[in-house]
Length: 102
Image 1 (cartoon, rainbow, N blue to C red):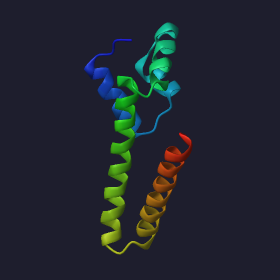
Image 2: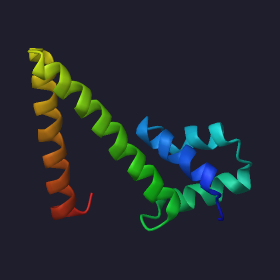
Image 3: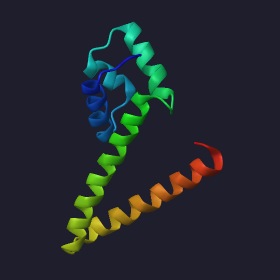
Image 4: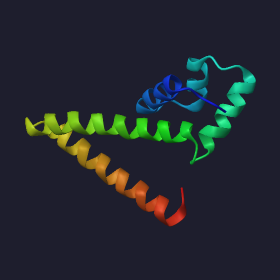
């Protein structure tokens, strides 16, 4: 499936919002055949679609972390607890991926 740069940027932006592949398909207005091909690429870790989506997820998490850090610097206890919880969850996810590939 050949996707232009503009569509890849949209996919990255949707990734930042952690939209599902089904929701992205609707937003891109893909027909059933395009949707099937999109889902195949979305599941392929080596495809451009998946790389742009994952980059978007990382950007979205980064933006949240930055905002929580700013609030934590101001003394917001909830923000400090939340960023610590997110870091721990990411560490667990990373270990799970390294150990079990999931």
